[in-house]
Each structure stands twice: as C-alpha cells, then as structure tokens.
Length: 147
Image 1: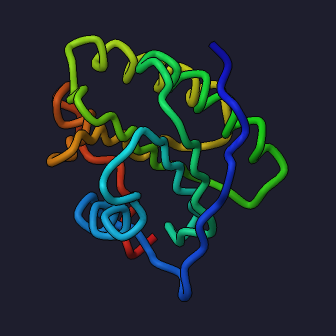
Image 2: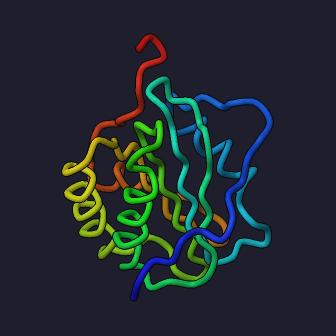
Image 3: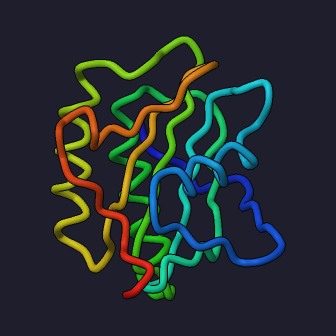
C-alpha cells in the first residue's frame, strides 16, 4: 500500500505551542473527526514547538502504513520550516497492538535519517489515545519551553 497525500489540512486560529504530551492531546482532541473515524493526523512544528499546520490523511489504512505515511510527510516537508512532527493514528476498533512497538522503532529509524524530530506517535481508538513512546519505556522528547 502507498500513503496518499493528505486530502485536507486543518488550520486553527492562533499558534499552539506543544511542550508536553498533555498539550498535544488537548490540541488533537479538538482536531479529531467525531465520531472517530480512520485517519492519520500529522502535526508540524517549528523549532519553538509551535504548530504551523496539521496534515490529515483520511481513510482506513493498514496499521503498518504509518511508516509510509510518515515517509510522505518527510517528503512534503523537505523545504518547509518544520523541525518536529507528532503523528496520530486513529483506528476505531483497533487499539494499540504489540506490532505497534516495532512500528515505533521503524518510525524512529526513518526520522533518524532526516532533519526532523519525531516527538510522539499516538494511537487512538474510539475511546482512548496512547503515547507509543511510553509503552516502550522511552523518555519524553518534548522540547523545553526554555529552548
């Protein structure tokens, strides 16, 4: 399967700043389609952790396609003023699975080859949203508000 370009981007008034997972979750909760449906959100942040755009990939994709979607985002942002990315996979009926831990490592490998930081990947079903990094015991990657 191939990741398709986003069908829309969502812009908000003001420029939210994300320095911790709770701030990201608060923002994401306002952006998700309700009732929750299959989609991937990509929050694009600058070096001050300000959200400049949100790309939305609509439609059901196999869970393993998150790596292809991330690769598409990397290609779309190659010349943009983007320093970090937060990914959100919304998968109604398919909560976090053990295979997602391997996908997290694949995402890390992909981002390690680029100029962008992967701050977090959240996996959401109808009721919950889980930070994958915490499931593998990694430290938070959120930038300090002090720079």
